[in-house]
Amino acid sequence: MSWLTFFITSHGTSHGVSVSEILAVRELDVDCGTKDDGRWQKMPQKSTEAYPYAFTVSYVERAWQHRWRCSDVTFHCLEGALCQQWVQTIREQLTALTSRPKHLLVYINPYGGKQQGERIYEQKVAPLFTLASISTHVIVTEHANHARDHLRTEAELKKYDGVVCVGGDGMFSEMVHGLVSRTQRDNGVDQNSPEEKLVPCTLRIGIIPAGSTDCICYATVGINDPVTSALHIIVGDAQPMDVCSVHHNNTFLRYSVSLLGYGFYGDMLADSERKRWMGPARYDFSGFKTFLTHHYYEGTVSFLPATDILGTPRDKTRCRAGYVLLQRTMGLYKNHHHVLQKHHPLFLLPEYKGGWRVIRGKFLAINAASMSCACPRSPKGLSPAAHLADGTTDLILVRKCSRFNFLRHLLRHTSKYDQFDMTFVEVHRVRRFRFTPRYCQSDSELDLRENGKRLFSQICRDHPACSCSPAYSSWNCDGEILPHAAIEVGCVTTPYNLLCKYTVHSESIQTPSLFPHFFTL
Ligand SMILES: CCCCCCCCCCCCC/C=C/[C@@H](O)[C@H](COP(=O)(O)O)NC(C)=O
Ligand SMILES: Nc1ncnc2c1ncn2[C@@H]1O[C@H](COP(=O)(O)OP(=O)(O)O)[C@@H](O)[C@H]1O
Ligand SMILES: [Ca+2]
Image (spheres, rainbow, N blue to C red):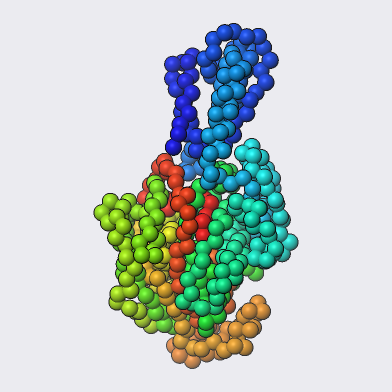
């Protein structure tokens, strides 16, 4: 990392800016007389008239709580040639940073969150891209899956260094589906086979948060702030992440990168989609309602524990991304963790010891968190110690319990207390899992659900005193509804290049894996 240090001679202090954090440099026209001194001076506004040449450096300033802001510093000088030399040198250094994007394809979801996507992009993000000389092609989506289908079939991807979505987790999911599906098709990979290895795609995806929960953004950057995300994109930050593929009867259904939730989160999402007019507050309303209905679901969860990894979902350490190390060991890429790096470098071998485990029961919630799932509602997230790119997902099983206990469990997501330390909750770090509901879902029921109709199955006979508990929930897959109850999930890391970098300034136990923002899938 090279640093430019500007000596502020007037005060005898220095001001250092890392080249990797410079966004732009521009010469200023200062129209005045000359003096033959030749040293750079950062001057108070009044005395700048004496210095006819100046240039301004825009750079990343770290503000509070993981926020990044763009700051300017102007340097004045007496000699034009020296001024130009500085500007040219800085430009050359910036050009040498190959991880920075120059051409971006941007999709804006005008419908997500508070429906402010276009305004957020135009007012907060576009000026920064222009400042950083990034050219963009902007598409405002006209309907759901517009971006996904455009990416999958039409978009001329060769022209771009990355794609950016302006929206929530659903919009990010569209990007993932468009790009990953296209890459598999181009490489002859059959998505319907759960065993097939996914070919990673080379384009990176950036998110500008403009959705309702923005969990993928929050869990990776540490905050859901459009300016911070734009700056991470400009400086070329990258973070590989896990992608889970979801299948049903050897048919590909979807990919998931954050949460797959059955029961509580599935029901809450299904209810909230009908209340979109409420905006992001719909989740509070539907969350409360779902909590009161207190439905449980019977079924069998089978999973393949990740025995070869160090670290568990109960770790007190957080996935802090001071730096990210990708290790390639016999085909397994493993991401970071300070403890791992210190004590077990390069010894992470994939083992499938122990085989599958099977758990049968009545569950209020079955959640698979491939990342912490931190969001403003729960700054530590559903699985605070989950890692961003280790090829595993944290499977959380919440068994039937009283409303009071379930409330205690939910509330612990918002406090320092351990949400897993309860008798009815268990958590496993897994490579694959499968869920089969106790009662088989008929094709006609599935059809009805797929067409958006709600149908409570009649099969209630085994629920004691039950007149309303349905046999099936649906899966919440990164905020999108998946009507199939029986699914099979495999988690793979699809890392690519080693673009990860960046020093994270501060952290606390409350703030989980915070990190960059331009994903490599
Ligand atoms: C009664 C007290 C309730 C306190 C509950 C605190 C638990 C909060 C944990 C939230 C975890 C959310 C995981 C995020 C999922 C997103 O992918 C999804 C979609 O996000 P989007 O709306 O597209 O930005 N949002 C939801 C709420 O399902
Ligand atoms: N132009 C559009 N009109 C309607 N729906 C859209 C449009 N563009 C995208 N979508 C869909 O909107 C849904 C919500 O988007 P998302 O970005 O997740 O916002 P939110 O966080 O509010 O849920 C997703 O299912 C996405 O596919
Ligand atoms: Ca959504």
